[in-house]
Amino acid sequence: MTTNLEKVSNHIEECIINLTVDTLNPSKLFTLTIQTIEYLENEYKGLSGIEKKNLLIEAFRDLCENVKHSSLTEQIKKDIQFFIDNDLDTVIESVIQLSKGDFEINKKQQQMIIRCLLKLCQCFMKKNKNESRP
Image (cartoon, rainbow, N blue to C red; front, side, top):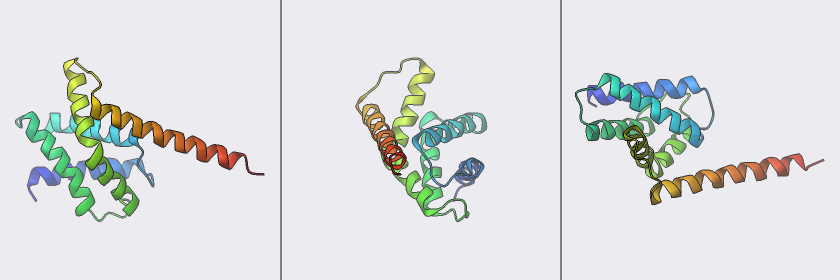
């Protein structure tokens, strides 16, 4: 593993440990991505944008494949892997668009928003079902 990858992977792991949660919801994953992008901007000024993006994605993958810390449960690893496969690229592109001031919602972003809204609806339904029990 390269030194840069190890350093960024350790940063992400540290952020997750500081969250002290059993699962990662979309908001926490988005925040984690933003924190890591800021970290990359400060620590790796010499890397191009695409190099930073690839390093970020590889560091997230490293968490799922190699990190054995007890706080990174299998569920958290599954959440991260799903995020990598479905949303990470979209989140990175959205942050780049926002930083340039030209944010427009594209099809990938719409799909991510719909997935988040569906999860939110499921949460409300589960909560409502639990509250209606005697």
